[in-house]
Length: 401
Image 1 (cartoon, rainbow, N blue to C red):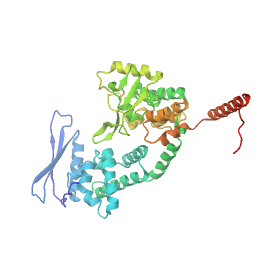
Image 2 (image 1 turned 60 degrees about the horizontal axis):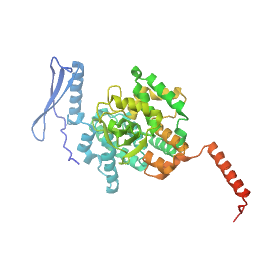
Image 3 (image 1 turned 180 degrees about the horizontal axis):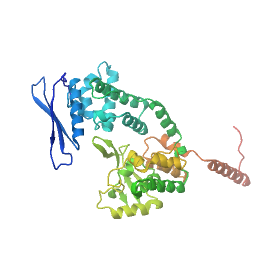
């Protein structure tokens, strides 16, 4: 943890806007000031496309200085700002509370939002971060502690005058957490019913995207047929696919990180092998043939960038499409529920299904094994046939004990 710097109070600034012709952002706005502690001359600058934008930035810096903010703090990223003011943000906390708060800051807040400038942290961004933690199956207390330290850091930003209100004070996340928990209890209810429903969804998403990008449909079909997370689909590289056995070794996933989307290990930190069924082999073969090398990504956005669940949602107008198809409940993660449900209905043994899913707990896998009505009727028929056969050969009858 960095030692917080004493921030100048009412520091005067000098400012100017310089025109640098021939540059994409030709207007350079700059502020200068004397640090009252070190007596050193410091400055901060930023380039803009118009003089109005440059002057607005200067005005904002001057307002920040009049409010007692170090001008560099006014443009800091959340991770850097939090480390600078952390001693102020955590004052009054007991040790037993401090440890889980700081773990939430390091392990969840900074990787998810640390790269975002403090002024650009919105309630919507915090909402999505919290939902992501819930979807990653963090416990309620873990989510609570992570959000609590974020609230404290953003409250310090309010006191510093960097922002007007605290965007981290989101409400209703407990209900969303409960909804996610309920879904985990019955993931089968979230699955698409059949192959035709999946292909119809894929085609509709392609039609709704800019320039009808075929890749979005491929991502959806691949995710459902492999029971993979969208981040894992984004992480597939040519070298991960064995076209001789049609097996995919899941080694990495794409997740939000400092500076944008990054690749890291799978959620369980273990590689796993997933079969590629006949329905997706032609799709995969075409992408392997087009790959420039073993490290080439098989699935990217239209400009070659990494994919995340948020990218897929926004690019395809997901919410509108699934509503029109009558699947208002369907989220991107439900493609994974779909694949696992289909495999369970195809009588894949539970221990094999667990390996394909990468579940740490067998209990999680067993939630996909709830039999449908036909399975129950078949079980009754099989038992009757078994008992009838035993009676015919004179075997002892069942008796109560």
